[in-house]
Length: 229
Image 1 (cartoon, helix red, strand yellow):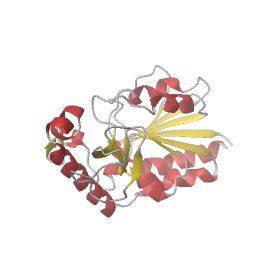
Image 2 (cartoon, one colour):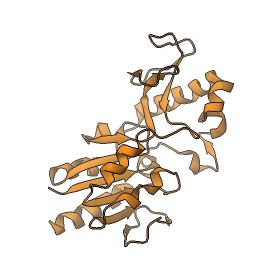
Image 3 (cartoon, helix red, strand yellow):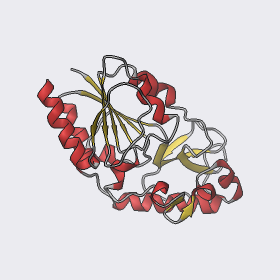
Image 4 (cartoon, helix red, strand yellow):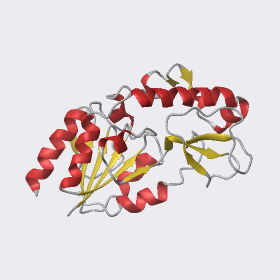
């Protein structure tokens, strides 16, 4: 069974109604990202940051996986599928995908500000000022903010290096280090990109481009991959 590695970005979740800050020139749901998604923002105004992510969590609870998420999950019937996602939502899990690596954290989890290894499942509950871990430090969103290291990046690179097929879905390939993952795909792997927009692909190898939204693009990808089996 071939190893199919899929890197997903904000474009796939946009079809479920979840916006990104790139939709409106550096604003994320009308918030300046520098005020809500950086370590400096956290130390400047924890209540604002917590409120922002509490709102995102409530938005996520109302969202549903779309045909792109569902199509990726169904590929597990024919391939060994690993999803590497830049998204912090849980729509891949809810669609049925079973092997998911979250590069940028998870919205439905909180972690200790003092000990990053202390991570808690909170579902769609709010995190409030004064909510603390067992060591007594304030809980923060389990999110990799702009300016922070991406701890899962090394694992993602190892996974990509083992791919027989590497697919990018709904990513502008502008956010590093995630955008550089495609360069770790082995020379024998076929490379695919699904996105309705023009994307600058940071690799000199041939990439099959399906210029469609994720929901339609994943269906077309599935047809083409199954035809090659």
